[in-house]
Length: 236
Ligand SMILES: [Cu+2]
Image (cartoon, rainbow, N blue to C red; front, side, top):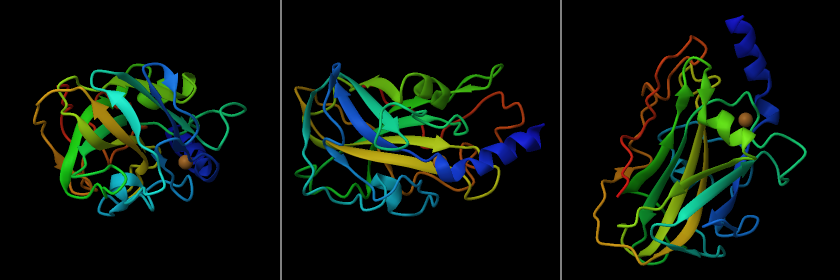
């Protein structure tokens, strides 16, 4: 039965990839692809050492991308879809099981000119294996919520322009090294208000190893706990 599940998940890969397509700010939809660096395809990143781990393929600049204002302390929502449509198919294919995480990195000047490389990323959200007895993952909840998950921008984050990085890690073939699939989308944001916190930071790429227990993992063996890569959430 377990190997049948793995086979099913594996055959679904080609048709089931997805991208970050919308950001909402305090309940207001900012529009399709607004303020987002759009990758050329919906394929995942699979190498944890690639520069694409920061903001996906072609994600190192955003000169033609707008930057959206977000008050510190705001509730924001990220919305993911397989293709450029909000209805008619699952937002995320059910075969894609795993955690969702969000990081933020302050730009030296503008978000549009920031490449997101270096020890600049602060994790502000992580949701993983929610219910071991039913094997419910963050992706299951996101899919049943139309591709959406929400979080709070810490109120003490300093004002300025940032890259906001959403990440969903699909673990359906992660029992093999290099099998974990990183779906990554970066938004260009301008935090207003805010405070004077100096949050902890990691590098992406850098913080993830191919052998991390949250990356090289068999999720079809009645997994009872899951530790997402990248360390602890900073909540301000
Ligand atoms: Cu896929």
